[in-house]
Length: 94
Image (cartoon, rainbow, N blue to C red; front, side):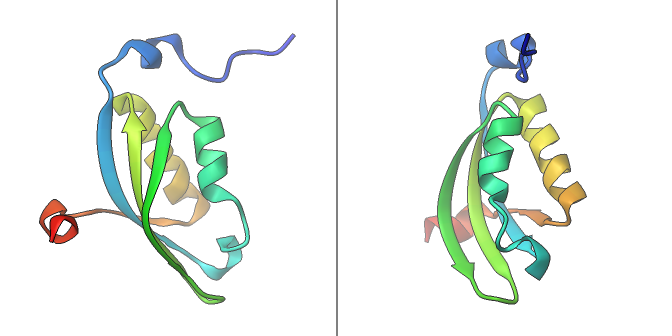
């Protein structure tokens, strides 16, 4: 019998939207990190901007979900070795 992976409490919390800059090290460039993020956590993702080379991947990612899911997803990304920085909205809006 499969166990649910997404918490019931998180489904009813007021969602938040967070924009982040993600910087991938070379070892993670070929991995489907964003896909894994959406399957491990109850999050909706939106890639706003991306640049990927053999040496580095830089992605502006928008996360939407319950605050505890967003926080857990960010911690998971950092644990993988992805650099996670908040986006300054004034820079994105111009």
